[in-house]
Every structure is written in C-alpha cells, then in structure tokens.
Image 1: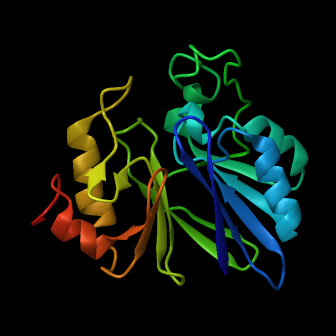
Image 2: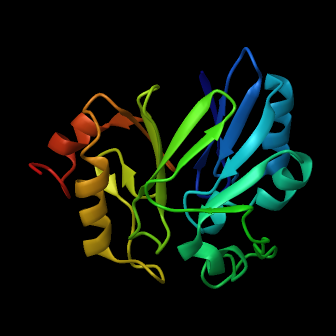
Image 3: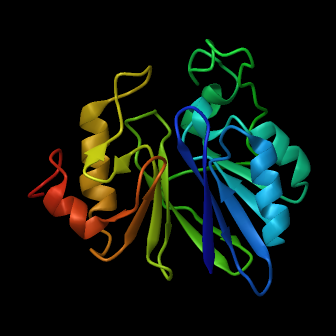
Length: 211
C-alpha cells in the first residue's frame, strides 16, 4: 500500500490517495479544492480509482467531488447518510459564501458505523466520529494500522463543534469510545495538519489526555 496526499485550498485540507502499486487500484479520501491537481496526481500515479470516501460534508472535504467523480467513472462515492443534506445544501456545507457553491449528488452507497467496505486489495472499516458534523466518520485500515479521521481528531486537538450540527459532547464521546479503542500504534491521518498516532493523542491531546 502507498498513501500519497495533496494539501489543497484555502483551508489547507489533506486529500489522500490510497493505492496499491501492484494492482493500481485505489481510493480518494476527501477530494478538496483544485480537482485538476487531484486528477493530475491520480494520472501520474496511474491509480484506477474505485472509491471516493467523504469523511464529512463540509466544502473543503468535497469541493472537488463533482469533477473527480465525473473523471473516475468506476468510483463509488461513500458518505454517512446523516450528512446527506450537506451534499447539496450550501448553508450546511459552508460553501454559501463562495462564488461556486458546493452542490453534489447523493452518494452511491451510504455507510454507517461498523460497515466494512472492500475495494481492490483493501478493507476499510467505518467508524462513527460524529460531532463535528452529524455524519462524521473515520476510515480505519486495520492491516495497515492507519485511520483517516477527517476533522474529528487532529494532532493534539479536535474538530470544531460550533458549526451547524456540531456537538462537542458527542465528538468527545466518539473519539474516546470509537477511536481510542484502536491500538496505540495506529497512525492518525487527519483532514488538516500533520500525522499523529492514537497513543500520542491519548497522552498529549488536551481535550482527551488521561482517557
């Protein structure tokens, strides 16, 4: 497995490309602004994109979805149904102030906590980390020991909960009960910022230390 990433847009959002160098199959996680850069990257890496995961329905995590989806014709789009309205509502997805509002079609598959999605050689476990948005999810690859947390958990901080649909108590509970049950050596790849680990966050995250 290889993980490549791009840092895109005004919110410096991490867009991840997870792929197998042997089969060339892969997925995109959170196609952000500048879809041309995403398309250029998958062409350069020769990735056959089979899936597009949206960790939650804010514009900086899906601003490039329409273009990338149109280009990657074999790819299914996965998002938690609790964020369904965020796909097409610029007020909920926070794109209302931008010249190009983010309005996307429904997902191909709605996912929920506990689902296992098999794509190519990879197995993706869906983890409920709602609280930043009502349908926020993390995507865990147990064999590879990596979890993509969107805007739920960052290095030594957590996602904002003051946007529409946010809930601090819910977010903290989901991190404690759903993410912190993963092994300490699992790498955390967030929607913004640098990598961290589950073990590091248990000790160093001021919102969660000592849990």
